[in-house]
Image (cartoon, rainbow, N blue to C red; front, side, top):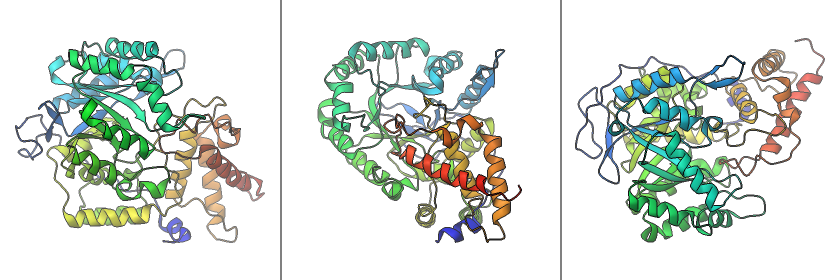
Amino acid sequence: MERRDFLKIAGVSAATAAAAACTGSKTPADTQQKEPGTMTYRKGPKGDDVSLLGYGCMRWPTTTDAEGKTVIDQEQVNALVDYAIEHGVNYFDTAPVYGQGESERVTGIALGRHPRSSYQLATKMSNQRGDYSYDFGVKMYRNSLKMLQTDYLDYYLLHSVGGSSGQLTSMQVLEKRFFENGLLDFLLKEREAGRIRNLGFSFHGDQQVFDYLLSVHDKYHWDFVQIQMNYVDWNHAHTLSARNVNASYLYDELDKRGIAVVIMEPLLGGRLANLPQHAADQLLARAPGASLASWAFRFCGTKPRVMTALSGMTYKEHLVDNLSTFCPLEPLSESDLELLEKIAEDYVKFPLIPCTDCKYCMPCPYGVDIPGVFAHYNKCVNEGLLEEDRQSPAYRKARRAYLVSLDRNLEKLRQADHCIGCAQCVDACPQRIGIPGQMRRIERYTEDLRRDQSPL
C-alpha cells in the first residue's frame, strides 16, 4: 500500500460493546475451554492454575492530589482488582519502576485486601538503569516483598534483558547485571528457599542474549519467560525495527524447551485496538460483535505454550471487554490467522513509530514527553492528518487539525522541539527506536506547518 493511499483511508478504529463478564470457575484441563462464562486457565510451571488474562500493573488509573500532583488512584485500583479477581483473573504483574515507582505499593494495598491464595504475584529485578551492585539488587528485591505485602513471590523476573548501555554491549550488560555481581546466585537460592516460586526473565532486544540464556537453561532452569508477542510482531518485529526479534522465533525456541510463555504488549502498546479504518473494517466484517482488541488477545491465547497474556487495563471497560474474550477463550481458526497476517503485512508499511508507551525512556531530563509526542504523531497518522502536499484540497484542514491537536494534547515545553539529542533515552527503549532522530523528524514536520502563514 502506498503512503498516500494509506493516509487517505486511515481513520479512527471502530469500538464495539463488550460482552457480558464471566465468573472464575476453574478446570483441571491445561489449556482448554470451560463452560460458557468461565475464565480460561492454563497450567503454570508448578501445576497451578493461571488465568489466561493477566493484569499488567504498569498503567494504573491516576488522579490529582490536594497539591495538584498526578498520583495513582488507589480507590479505582482497588475496584479494578476486586472486579478482576471476582471474575477469575489471578495473575498480577508489576515492577519497582512502574508507575513512577509507585505501582508495587499501590498493587500491594489492593491485593492485600484479598486472601493470598486467591492471586499470583509477578514482579522484577529492575536494575537496568545503571547500578548493577549486589547490594542494590538485593535491596530492590526485599523492598518488593515489603511493598507487595507478601513473604513470597509467585513469579520473579530478571527485568528487560537484552539491552545495551553506553559503551557496554548487551552481553556485557547481562553479565554485569546478574552474573558478575552474584545476583543470579542469590535469586536461585531464594527460589530454593521457596520465597521465589518461579524464576524467569523478560526479554527485549539482542537475540544473542536470548539465545545465551536459553543455552544455559539446563543449568538455571528458567520456569517461564516473558516476551513481546502480537500478530504484528509474530513475523514483522524485525521489519518495525532491525534490532527487534520476531516473536515467532522467540516463542518457538521456548516451546521446544517446554518453557512457559508470558506475553507482554499483546496490543502493541494499544495500537492494535486502534487500527486504521480499512484494517478495522476487515475484522468487523469477520466478527461484527467483537472488539479489535479481542482479535489480538485471541491470537496470543491460540498459542498453547502461552501461560498468560498481560493487559494494562486502566479502565473498567478495558477489563470487561478482555474478560469477554477470555471467558472462555475462543481460539482463532486458520483462516482467522491468515487474515491477521494479511493485516500485519499491510500494517508494517504504515509510517508509524513503534512506541508501546512503556515509559522506560522517562523522565526526559529536558522535559520532553517522549511517549506523548509519539502517541500524538501516530494518532495523526491513523486519522490521516499528515498531509504534506500543500496543493492538496485536504492540506489546510489537516494542517489545522494537526497543530490544534498537538497544542491541546502536549504542553509546549514537552513537545519534540525541546529534545536536544542527548540520547539518554535510547538505551532504555525496548523497541530500539532512534528517539532523537524521530524527534528531529517530527520537529521539522511541525515547524514546517507552523511556518506556513495560512490562517488556521
